[in-house]
Image (cartoon, rainbow, N blue to C red):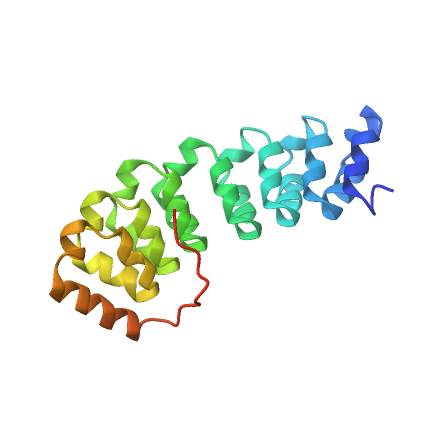
Length: 194
């Protein structure tokens, strides 16, 4: 039963919820079954990695320590980029980790410090992954023509997040339109942020 339905672990005895073999079988079937595992197993890096590869949001059931592990958080993000919100704040303030996170999904920029939202290297990675991530860049970078053009090149929708002074500049808007035409093809249903 545990193999076919990971949530069956909810009804297992405490002893089975503490059994690595049983919990591993459950989280491979359904990563969210991690919530029923013993506290000790929710601190097992190998087991949590298995869980987040099945359900990135299972990160919420991992120990605090593992929510500060870049390996675990980035693995969770690869399955569901929204898992970034569950990472501990100290990890979301680590520039090296943030660079990797915004490469996976530029929207991760929303959940980092203002200092990192003002970091040109991080913002460039974020808007390269998702042009509309410009919405989460600092006000100064939203006014930087080079940054905004790069974002618009990836998504024409990004222009809405540019500083007012750039959106009012006819020459800049024309350059942005040309940059978008030469950028990657954008699907008409791309979701705008925020």
